[in-house]
Image (cartoon, rainbow, N blue to C red):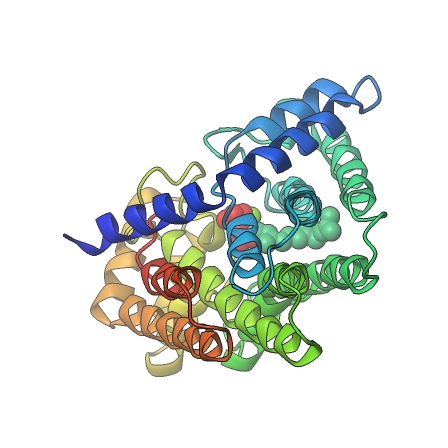
Length: 331
Ligand code: FPP
Ligand code: MG
């Protein structure tokens, strides 16, 4: 069995274990979309109905189910996950405006279908609705974690914009960007899952670290996939980071150990497919994708280490496999 098959198998098993919660959350999100004011209703429904990977929900549900001593409440988990997914979707709708992306999940992005003005407003509406899902949650840390994540997403996206075109971006600055724009939401997912599982405060914080490392790894892999490396059915265009002048980890590693001038020249013409392919060849030859993947794997290992603190169970083993397989995801 190759690694990609292993990824598919692990995701399938994880998904089937949490299917009722995924279904309930899908219903909750559809209801919110259908209750949107006219002008937004159809547009938001289309966005919500597109099948994403739902990895954030799956992580939340698996952690919620990882405490053998306590059965997590289905509605509670589904509300938290709906909030996370709606916030994630809102951020993607805004991100596509910022990146001028035409494709999302294999279909026209909201901005390309309806224009930037509608996309900004639809994203705002979805952001507001994401917090409504957790209004009735008894544990006030849940809405707080989600509000923190929303704020960090914005801060992360702003630092990414500030770092655009900076070929001297440091490794620490890159990590700070991806912690903000991606890992912060996975921290919220993991902590909400831990709260649904009934874990004590220390374990909730440990799960936050698990979410942080998982999120960092997830974005590094996303950044490698943007170069088309290992990508399959991506549902979005490749080379967008390159064409938007974003220095992500593979390029950062290249600049750390190679002369900058030639690559800088190539990057200026990255919208030409031949030039983009030449850049990929150069990064490949300099082992930058492999090194970036190793860094992602080291973060996945750190996420796995946290599992030692949770009770041993089938779900715990599945989470370990889930992290291990994540390095091999192709979309
Ligand atoms: C995708 O990154 C974008 C994000 C993970 C976060 C975007 C956040 C914002 C736009 C801030 C606004 C937030 C709220 C709360 C509405 P990417 O461009 O690297 O990934 P992609 O290739 O999937 O587009
Ligand atoms: Mg983008």
